[in-house]
Image (cartoon, rainbow, N blue to C red; front, side):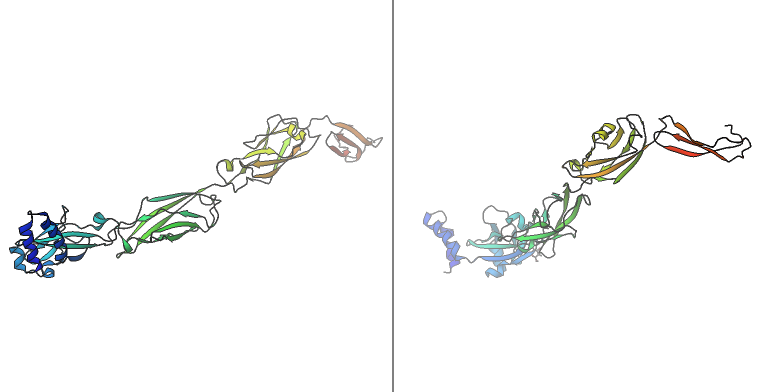
Length: 396
Ligand SMILES: *[C@@H]1O[C@H](CO)[C@@H](O)[C@H](O)[C@H]1NC(C)=O
């Protein structure tokens, strides 16, 4: 009696008789029948042949029908395979998706049984499902955003989110590529577990005043064939650092102001700009080391830089005034400019006329053009001196 028919008989006779037999049955089943094992790639078309199970178990084709051969699942699992009774082929009957069945497990096995009746005979079938590269690496977000201050030092590192690939082994993410750009390279670290994660490395300092934001493409590539990849955009917002001082539009501002100009006359407006943003670029203007007198004569708008007359400007006191103005940004970077104000004279003093010399007496027939004297007209500010000439029409 061979093991198979012995087992079959046992099952036949002893199924419900006593416990010993049932225990014997399971032990015997396990040891008596050689399992058959197949390997199949996931996602094979329905009807694809996995192997010829009749041949592999040495069962004749005729026997399959006569003993009502069928495929059963281990428990109540879904059935993925069936047997073609006219060929003995084990065929795919349903979609086998390795990721759906086994997720990230390294091995994925579907267990089914070939059942024959008269006598009852069971053969375990293990179908090892092989991964195919049917999934591409994927980033959880399309855009990976960073905010990096422009003062970040060369060599600074910024961890990137991993890309995921539902496949396993070499069909998962193998490397990352970064689109060429001036500021960042990519560094890949491989953990003990083989997981790879990547970080951006700053290789050239950022300058917000040159570039406020950067965008480049990160690509994750798997090792399958055909190779698949997934991309995400890296978006870097460059945050401002106070790396710029205010800059005046002119180093020296020249203005000319008639003396006695009324209060609130605008003399000149100084203007500085600061390339930084927010408080880093907020400018206030102030006099720098102004004399008490200057402060009495002029006002300066801290926000607009407008310089106005505040006191009474007198040419006779001073003909030129020089002011130093300081521009300061929020955190305190400063720069300076000079304002030169030329005071122009207005006729606010009665001239004093003096006759310097007079040739005496003047004959009445003196010819026109003869110098007869010098008139000195003097105001507080200037001396006009010229020859007094006789003309025919003059009457002295
Ligand atoms: C079994 O295989 C034969 C020969 O390949 C084929 O003609 C037949 O359609 C198959 N039967 C089933 C149920 O798939």
